[in-house]
Length: 191
Image (cartoon, rainbow, N blue to C red; front, top):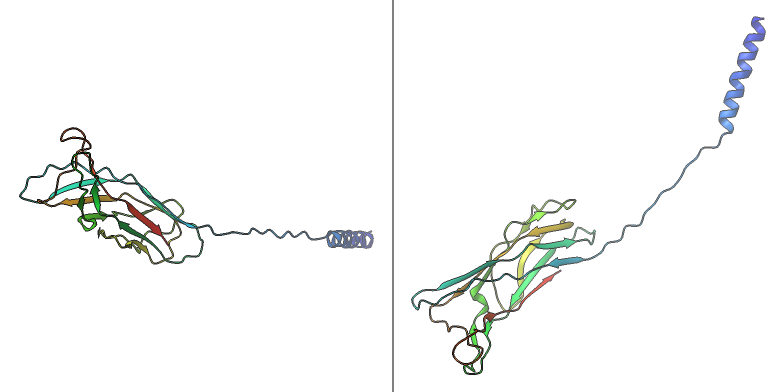
């Protein structure tokens, strides 16, 4: 009986081994192509405070914009820069005051403030954003040496120096009523 039990046990083990060996292994290959997108910047202009000339000192018009977002979705880790330029500030001519009045672009300073990484972005360490005196020529406002992939947020503040000898804004019509504010066009590029 012992011999039959040993033979039966051996046959059972061999049978199980053969059954296990006959079952094919299963393997799947999973893949996904990840494409890069682009650099983008969402900016906003501030509303600057009104100023009353005093004739003796420079006055300052200030304001803070709503939050900006800068996104590097290229997936390369390459450096990027936000550049800015400004036109001179002008108060449009009115019907009586027919000469356009100007305050030059370098009177405007933009202070980008703290740059923070949004969820999932690389750390903001290494992104530089010092205060910048504006120019009519494009110049670096915010620089990321890389890798800085993802979205970054900041809330810049603006300061416009109004010289003591500046002209007031022109009246729209006549010599009373609405004033044409001094305006400038700010142009931002990210590359």
